[in-house]
Length: 390
Image 1 (cartoon, rainbow, N blue to C red):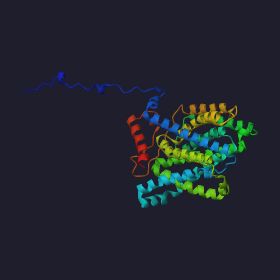
Image 2 (image 1 turned 180 degrees about the vertical axis):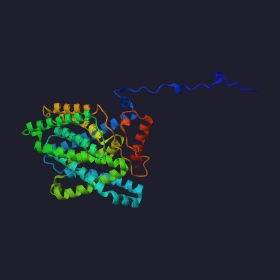
Image 3 (image 1 turned 60 degrees about the vertical axis):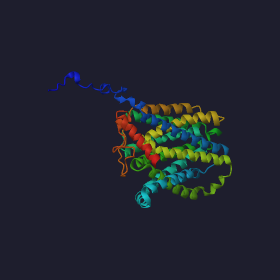
Image 4 (image 1 turned 30 degrees about the vertical axis):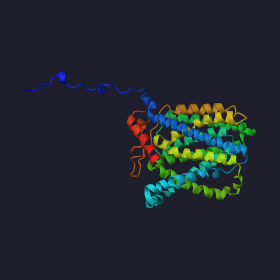
């Protein structure tokens, strides 16, 4: 008996196979659907959390200057941050590598992490020094100088390429910084402006330059090596550099560390916010880039403006400040009209299944939602898992 498989007996194709793919929101070949992905939401919220950490450090630093005029121990202020990083993350590296593997790593890479620690310590030193001489409103905007520094260094060392409109955005940001400097020049005889606004501005720009160098260097490191290794070594060598610098320049200033509970409290608050910032920043470097990190931190300018103007300060900032802030924001918006390529950095350690990046880093398409959303979620989960497991 023959069996006849007629078309009536053909199994129906499941409905989901005929479903149309999700609609993508595109304009001029830019896929805006990425803005609705879990990947982008996580990156955005993480950036805002880091911006709040920066705001906390600014508030703590400002309160120290208000309550204790002449408080001037910038290296000591950040020392406890590096000690905490070293104490928490170095044992994790030793546990994962063993003592032999840890010292082998140290022998081969100590000088790289020493340079990272040196640049980072100097960045914190000059920024903290700037708060002694100028007002926090100017400090928050002048720190934005780190953004063009990151752009230039990413071009040279990470081989990132930018759209012409992004250069225009950077120039506009610099114009906003020029307005800040002009504002301080006009207010240099105003007590609200600080002891020496121009000197403070120069310290802020120098510190932001070191921050930009540190950010790009750290992004390179966290894409090459495990997070716990980078954070532990940054803490260890930052601690070493800090002790040397304190012994050379701040040993005579330690008497400023009194027993006042308010001073101790704000120093603890500052270092707690910095520790959280330093622990989460490498994740953002993995998921995005050092440039996105700096752009996200500019949100702290707004948070700081609101808090210092209406909570801490009796006086308002310079009248030009709103125009300067608006100029910086416009520059950043123009910058983000077009995407930039991502650095192509391959991890050089074997256990890279949790490295959070693929062989070529995160490319242009994955930044704007063209890639598979499941790959995005896997990359995010792997990066977060590495930090949690470590």
